[in-house]
Amino acid sequence: MTALKTIAGLTVAFIVLSLSGCAAKTRPPGDPTVCYQVQPLKDGSLKYNKMPSNQKDLEHCAAALEAMRLRFLAMGGSQKMLVGAYQGNFIFLQPEGIFTAPTLESHRYLALVRTGDGRLALPGAMPQ
Figure 1: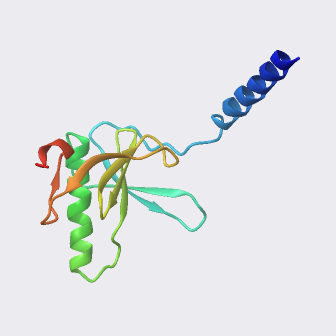
Figure 2: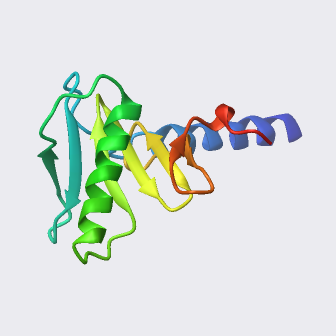
Figure 3: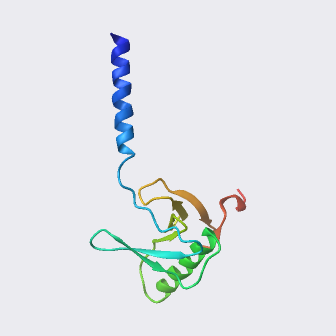
């Protein structure tokens, strides 16, 4: 009887985990070398604004987004965080560094860290 309860519990847990993976996830465009600035709209949708030049990798796209953010701050803007997209990955510019995720709802992974003077660097490049 205990074995049946265990099997039934595991079956229910498997079904719940399987169904939770079916939730709709927001994925960015996957165009090669195209960097986007992502703007959330009031209706909950996202607007993808194409950056002016092609970028060869995620790091260069993040740097272009950071330069844009700094220009807006210099003109009196107040937005400290920014979202972008590059080749099917979201890019999140935050005060702690640059994070990336395959969907808007996924766990974010550290891509670049900020140095003491605010520049961006690869996480392993900074001395401990």
